Length: 501
Ligand code: NAD
Image 1 (tube, rainbow, N blue to C red):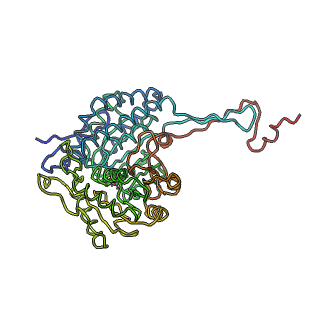
Image 2 (image 1 turned 90 degrees about the vertical axis):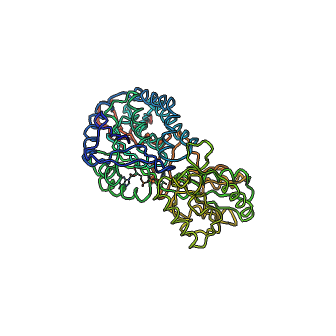
Image 3 (image 1 turned 180 degrees about the vertical axis):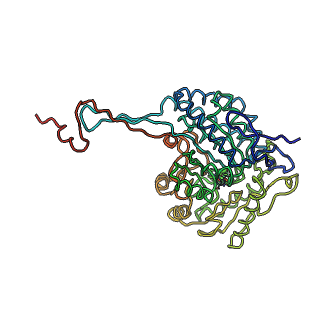
């Protein structure tokens, strides 16, 4: 019988008040039901918030280095259970085992980084402009953080939010994507096993338009961190703006790899295959545009088609598989739609362009790796996020043109340049309008200890990861202590501070 999973609210695993559930299926085999998960309602969210307020009162008083110790144990438990979690994640999300192992590793790295941050969480002490006056800043926890996450990094992305939020002393309410609730369940189990006070974390499953919306609209949740599509981010942003909430948005991308005529083409080939077809193209940083210098365009394109056609599709749990399925039927229909759009716009489908069938592939949401040639700047397949195994190839005559094309989209997450010319590389670093640029590496490959995020409609100026995310989850408080024993006026009594005798 299919297992009914529960929410984690008020320190206990509990059924939703709605009594309703949804099925979670394996995208490589739609007949394989992983479990049923709560289709929660606003009442469940309200209970989670009440409990999180109690959790916050206690957890925020725990010294930061001790909070860090809990996160260190979380990292150790993730290490112990890495293989089991990776397998569960592949079963529910579809990407290949090597990638889900990497996803768990990112969580481990994030936990261990957060541990050490517990002994830093620096404030600043700076000179005052007046004598006998002390000036400093320190960090305070904020309160309740609502975390809303997408399907494509079922463990890593929640940890990017949850671990720094907890390290800073906040309580968290976690709403994972509907397609990956099981990984979220395992993560919360680990937090509890590591000794996190139970009311500091709440897990509420359900639909974004119900649970996510209720979280965003609840006045007691003062911090929202969202990763997902630009469209959903806009809805959340409007509400948070109206309610004056602190908000971090990480959204879509239309990332380009630029290959110049002096590039190492074998290196670029490996990079583009990994960037475009890894995670079946469902990474926010996926290489969805290839911008190639005309002198090497035909040669590189042939090399790509030869290799991409031979990529082995299958269930991610099979170690020989190179490309897994899409997350669900809706995602596959979106890919089909965009390939149609590309054809109508005059692009050539060089390989792929069909659902993948045979050898059991019809049981899942598989789609052939697809290369669209003859794409020009401004076409919809060049501008819009497809989020699938589709690479749009654009021919250019110069680095200037390549940079212009890279920058000519509404997104700005990641970019990459293949060249042996150091001057070109440094120019591109400065001129590519993205939050991340890779040189001689594909558009993917971020590390947990550096800030991650994008510009333009990819983000709203915040970063995840690294040292910057700790600013987002803490409030800066400034303290002045005047020990002169008299009234000293800032900006006014400063002249008198110079000893001219
Ligand atoms: P999505 O926007 O459909 O869903 C993301 C989350 O938002 C889910 O948990 C969903 O339930 C919730 N949600 C949906 N409607 C909501 C609402 N009205 N109010 C509150 N919450 C709501 O995104 P997805 O399909 O899960 O993920 C794919 C998208 O995520 C792509 O656009 C991809 O580029 C983006 N992404 C961005 C990054 C990044 O760091 N920039 C990383 C990963 C994914």
